[in-house]
Image (cartoon, rainbow, N blue to C red; front, side, top):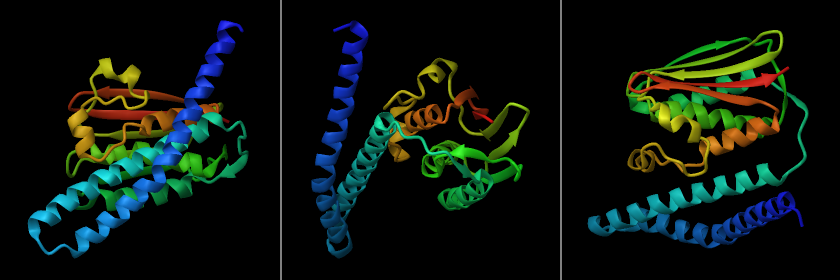
Length: 232
């Protein structure tokens, strides 16, 4: 067997292992998570309630990690590519409303500049997951009352999704590794925000499946810009 074939076989084994492990973990974790939810709601003792609440929070995070791992496995293993027209402008407006809810008392300012005539072909669910990951990250890592700009436009060759924030920014040394699985710029901050460490890996794989690419620009304490470039 050639080295390339060996690498492909090992990669398939890795994907299958992750997918199977995630499937096996999902059911018992769902049961534990459900019982903890009941205990949090019914426990009268404040100390015990706090313990159950922390356990519930951690199982929620574990469930999110498993769901993201399963999504990544599907993205990596599926060769089928949907070629349906997707109304990205409609999707962006919906995601923006969800982001405002996530923002809550932080009261971020959202600025939409969307060309409603620009549409692309692809998988609606995959694109929604990809865009949500970037927008929600902007909310999580932008201080209260900061600004988030969402632009959707095109030129003669490409359609562009540009998401810019006035957040905490990212040091240049981290940018090349941001789309790696579980890579975290600040582990403590990421865990506190409830992130799985898989969001930008999902973004990368969705873009690859749409023959698109990602550009990341960032500066510490000034914000970040994520640009998704789709060929027309």
